[in-house]
Length: 451
Image (cartoon, rainbow, N blue to C red; front, side, top):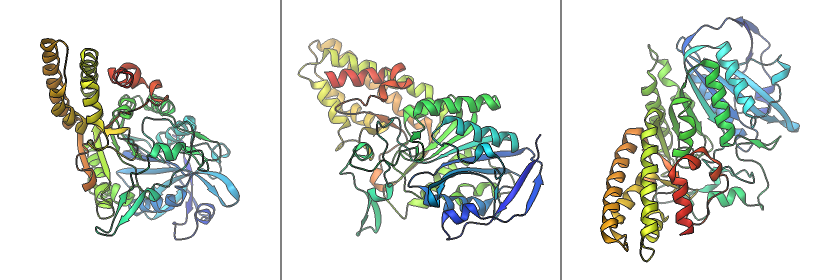
């Protein structure tokens, strides 16, 4: 096992990020890493308008620091003064931030939009800081299952307005997030992009990176966490389920500060290391503790990926029955009911309005199927009976798959997992996803929009 050379970095203060990442104490020491219970890896794609939040989050990590239970490691791609592109890899100790790659010429200016950068960071972590359990955090902009055609940075803080009655931030839903992202009038900055290269992690790249990471350790990761917007989707979980046991993410957009990593990591300060399931639940609760006094528009959920196949099968079965109903409908009653069930006035949706809460949509559909009319009444009645049963099964499956879920008052009927459901056209990137290709939901969307 290799011996690492560490360079101790001064703690972040209120100084500019450039100073914080370019000046460090010159003391060096060698340490031979030993296996601990858990290694937490935070991949910070910071060459965008989130850069200013990176020092704050890293300082929060250092408030807990690595110890006998946990290794805490961070990869930061950032731009310094003069547009200098740098990559910094840190070992986070208790009240110390230790630069690890100062003398490695191959990791000085990496591309965070390249999946090989993610793989390189993971490989470096497990080689130098082995553990029995692995938690990987993607820290950047997120966009759910859609891969935008044009990359433009949106400061999520500007999507919130202060409600003087509650003194809390609330989302302005008058403009759809997709329109903001793909509006050519906005200067291109990038969503999940490395601004210096224009690259970003598409869902296909995410799949590739995770596949190589699990091959490296020969098992699934214990947890994948998205410190990013809009990622708590059935379609995203469909990707991650092959490579991890649990997924932590938000259905809604996330304010720039993201997680409070001091609270996020606090279970590792106990005498014994946390069990992963309880740690995952803690992350969800810690998010609520951070944002419940700030905004009424927050979400955070923990998905048990080992339960996901049954829910996906249910969604496919519901979609298949809906397609049969569409084929046999009279007077467009099935189509009109479906569109009413997913209409933004009737279903919990998010700042990208084509992302709807699956549980809430199922409830609407369960209450709406009696409005279906068919030319063949007997066969139609049989289809409706089957559909009701499948929806009821699906509601139960959602509750057993989403282990922990917290929401703000404005999103009270969000149950932790979204699904893509546009009302006019299907985004071309969605059709390329494995979920759309292999689940009848994608075919149902096509039939519904063309009906």
